[in-house]
Amino acid sequence: MNEIKTNRQTYKPIIKKAANHIVLTVLAFIFLIPFLGMVITSLKPETEVLLLPIRIFGSRLAMENYQRAWTFFPFGQFLFNSVFIALCTSLVAVITSSMSGYAFSRLHFRGRDLLFTMYLGTLMIPQQVTVIPLFIIMRRFGWYDTYAAMVFPVGFTAFGTFLMRQFLLTIPYEIEDAARIDGCGAVESFIRIILPMAKSSIATLLIFTFINSWKSFLWPLIITGSDRVKTLPLGIYMFNGQYGTDWSGLMSAASIAIIPSFLVFILFQKYLVKGITMTGLGGR
Amino acid sequence: MQLGKNQRNMLTAVGFLSPNIIGFMLFTAIPVVQSLIISLYDWPTFGERKFIGLQNYIDLFTKDPLFPKVMGNTSIYVFCYVALNIVLALAMALWLTNIQRGEKLYRSVFFLPQVTPIVATGMIWKWLFLPKYGIINNFLGIFGVPDINWLGTTGTAMSAIIIMSVWQGFGYNMIIFIAGLYAIPESQIEAARIDGAGKWQVFIKIKFPLISPSIFFAIVMTVISSFQVFDQTMIMTAGGPANATNTLVLYLYNNAFTYLKMGYAAAMAWVLFAIIMIFTLLQMRLQKDFVTYE
Image 1 (cartoon, chains in turn purple, green):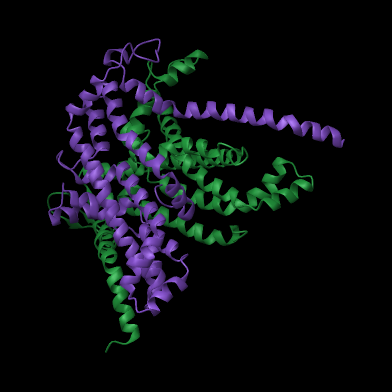
Image 2 (cartoon, each protein chain N blue to C red; image 1 turned 60 degrees about the vertical axis):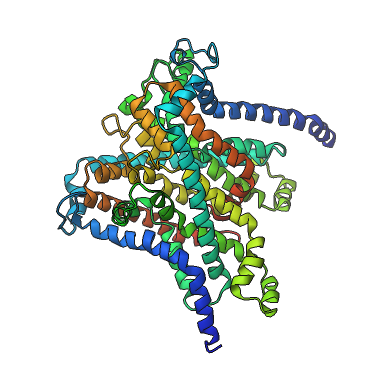
């Protein structure tokens, strides 16, 4: 009995392992077909996109699709806006959330926990509840169709505060206490001790906010009118309406919108995964 | 030096909190209250506003034939999407935590759509679902399946949206489950194996109970977020055909920004909010029973 078992154990796992990897690789490939199809179609000549039977590759590399996507709409401007707005939003989120996260985790003041519970409560408010009044408020501020409207209402987040607080709670108090005894004030200790230690959670919040802003559709759709502050998702949406059948042009636009998020993901995956497992909330 | 310790602490706290609190008041607290007020008004984007009490809510549930339809569509979407998402995420997490090597690479692949704009992936899927020329129909054609106009037929449009959404979203919960599975002490699984438990028994008796809190949390969070589905339906079908894929937030958007009925749309937002609140409370209530380890 024992002998059979050891015999089995020697090569069965190897075959099983190989089979696992083959099946998983095939699944992963099928899973990626939408992205592969996007890139391939974006490089096909426009006239060859809708041909039967389907041919995987076009007769030549049709870079003019990208040119078309680039010039039909001010894509350069949209790309800049997407990057600029995502960066500003992340910056606002990181600055304000790390400050409030610090107060909620390491300062002692009356009403702290009550206030924090209120903050937590607002996490469940769906964006759609605030979107209508925000639209009205933004117009009253004269912020309709401005960068400010794209950045500020999104940058101040209860989620960011929650994330930073959770992380800052894990920093041992002794480290800060030692500095405080040496006469270091709260501000100084925050900047010189806490922030450097919180680098990885700051990175996490930064990535979350960046990607969310990059993906965002509903709010930009509502709050922009002209091409001045529009972002890439809106460009693709416009493409959809007006050039619905120009699939190769559209796929070029989609590639321009998707590939940067791949890069951000590949470079900062570690932080994203950390944020997800820590909170289970961000970026849903 | 004249300030007491408490006052000094308070002052420091105010300094640290005020940027976030001001933004929070301005962009969350005040709008929430305001949206409740707007929902009690006949509030056209332009023109005269009139207080009408609960009339918007009454109209939603008694006069508007589209609202029940939209709620029905949204419920079907939520149910199917959440079920498929959780099952797939859990299955993949169990599989990937078992292969020892290369887990990270596969995990990245399945998570990838999560970081991309749904507007872009929605367009790609519209192209995949194309009648006659689409990859999906051509693939199914090999098996003799007749050509389907996925997004243009009332019977299939919602299924197509759900398929696309599961592809887009299940990687998120997969990551949560993988983390949960890795947190299970190896010794427990080993002990069960020694006692003669097979793979399936290890899952039912050890793994599942231990990660049930994260499964439960993931279900509730996914329900909450999928009630807010908008990008896919807006991009791929605009709610059509014949409102077959018109969902709550899409209908809300159209009421507020196409028909310019802000009050009516705000009432709809509060219905959504109420639904989400129920699920949140449910989560807090049941969490106590579900948490089997800490």
